[in-house]
Image (tube, rainbow, N blue to C red; front, side, top):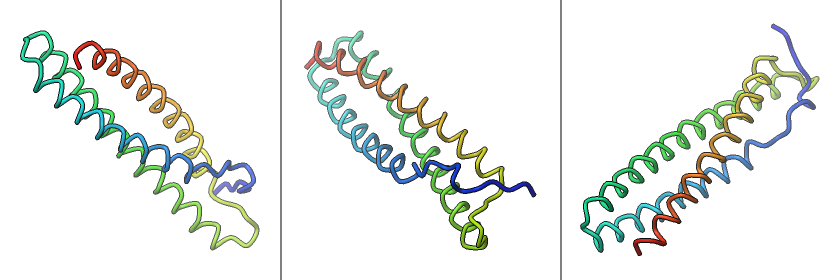
Length: 127
């Protein structure tokens, strides 16, 4: 098993989990706003957009939950291996997974912000 020093990790697990928690709360608020829009507007084109954003927010919520799970699992695995290693080395695969999580978090954050921005424009039109 190939090992790598823990000094190569940028300990972002907590930061990512906090940001994803915030995004989850924000999704809940956006869903409430979406319900308000649907209640005030019965036009078919508006309801079609409401359904679109409902689906988008559900997808984002699912993606965030999956990412939170994977971040937590990586954090637990790193901590576990560090407890077993007096030298501060962990399996290189954990580092690779960590790097993949960096990319996934960045991508998810970007997509979430785009969806939120589009939704806010939609909401401003119909509130």
